[in-house]
Structures are given as structure tokens and as C-alpha cells.
Amino acid sequence: MPLLLKLLAQRIALGLLLLFLVSALIFAGTMILPGDVAQSILGQSATPEALANLRAELGLNEPALQRYFDWLGGIMTGDLGTALTSGSDIAESIGKRLSNTLFLAFWAAVIAVPLAIFLGLLAVRFKDRWPDKLISAVTLASISIPEFLIGYVLMYLIAVKLRWFPSVAMINDNMSLGEKLSSIALPVAGLTLVVLAHMMRMTRAAILNVMQSAYIETAELKGLNGFQVIFRHAFPNAIAPIVNVVMLNLAYLVVGVVVIEVVFVYPGMGQSLVDHVSKRDVPVVQACGLIFAAVYIGLNMVADIVAILSNPRLRHPK
Image (cartoon, rainbow, N blue to C red; front, side):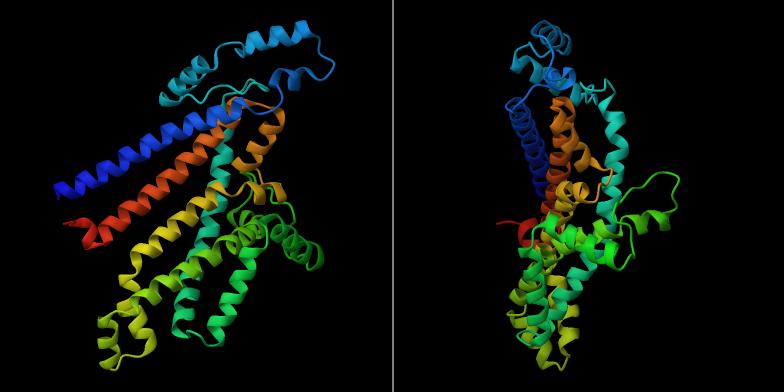
């Protein structure tokens, strides 16, 4: 147990160190963005004196290192800062958008994860036969198509031609759960198609690797049919790599929603990030980037910990 706690503490410390390094990269990246927030606020006809006064008011003339540590200190105390363009509190303004993004990612995961695992198990059961080839072909095709194109194709076919669901995914607090689900049906479908293939193929590969083991042959010699062998013996022993790939794709569902949110005009974090990049509102861009990084690192750390707990060789290294 002490060794296990030591491994967990190491993973958590590594995650925090990585988050610190990512914060420095995010700050440096926003500093080299072309354009100027003062110019964006005042417009192209602003005088040099007005620009200089606004830059001084916004603190843009301070050294970059000082601004970074001021920003980092605020982050560590829970203060994400103030938006330069609107003057509103960033934590309050993006809180609702973060909940919208998590809502979208949750329902995409509810569909994508069980479906991917089921298709992976089905592909293993009918390995090298037509179900396996069909599933592999469809998933490879979905991997090859860019997200924005998947979004526009879904919008054209389902929203414009069939008129089953709205093309613009707008939600608010006054809508019922059913209305919200109907509104986000197309973004959920787009995200599902994006992450389904990777999870399915990794599930298939992990179980096929386990199927080469001696105890699988013993189970087959006992007279168990193909599905019983896969569900009772192969799948439980392939949990660790499957959990890893599921966690990676769950992280992508939260972090990688930017394109889908922009295509369907969904009021989430990705849409907010794109809007404020165009306005050169650096504090909001930094806050969105740091939240995305924290979610990604956190879910990867959870996957690492689950892999340690589910694998005796990792729990008790020699």
C-alpha cells in the first residue's frame, strides 16, 4: 500500500508540474499572437495617444514576466482575471459556457463509449469476417474525414434535407432536458463519429492481444462459445488499455470541441475561445486554454491511476 500511495503521489505531482509548464506555454503563446487588444477595442481609427493611454490602463506596458506571475498568482487563488474587452469577471462569464461544454461532452460520451466498446467486441468476435471488415471500413472513413466536414454533412442531411433536428445548437436554462437533447443532437453525433473510431480500434486491438494468451485457449477447450470467452476472460484482462484510450478520448471530447461548437454555433468554451482570440482578449484566451489543459491533464492522470490499480504488475513492480 505505501508503494501504491507513492506511485499515486508521483502521478499527481507530475500532473501539477505539467500544468505549470503548460501555463507558461499558454502565456507565451498568447503573447506572440498578432494584433493588439487596445487596437481591437478602439478600432483602426484610434489615435496613438488613445492607444498608449488604453495600453497603460490595461497594464499592457508592464514586463511580460511580471504579468505572467501576476496572472499565475491570480490563478492559484481562483481568480481568472477580468476580460479586457468587456470588463466582466472571467470566471463568471465562462462558467456557464464550461457547463455547456461539459453537458455536450457528457452526452457524446454516453453514446460513444458503450458503442465503441460494443463494436470493438463485435469486431473481435467476427475477426476477419464481413462484420469486422465493415466496422473497420466505416470507422476508418470517419477518422479520415475532418470534423468540420462531418459537421456540415450532418447539418445538410439531417437538418436541411430531413428536418429532424435544428442546425444551430442553441440551449438556455428555460429549455427542458428533452429540448436541450434535441438541440444538441447534431453536435453530439459529430463528436461521436470523431472519437468512435479510435476507441473501437483500440478496444479491438487490446482484446485481440489478450486473445493470444494461454488461458483463452483453456477457456475455449472447456467448450465456452466465442462471446463467453471474450466477455468473461478477454475483456476483463484488457480493461487497462481500454480505460486509457477511453480517458484520452473523453479528454478530447472536452478539449477538442472547438471546431464542432463553431460549426453548430454552440455556446460553449470552444466558441468563447474563438470569439476572444479574434478580439485579442488575452486573459480570456489564457483562462480557456488553462481550463482545457487542466481537464486534459486531469483525465490522463485518472487513466494512469486506473491503469496502475487494475494491473498487478504495476501495483507491485519488482
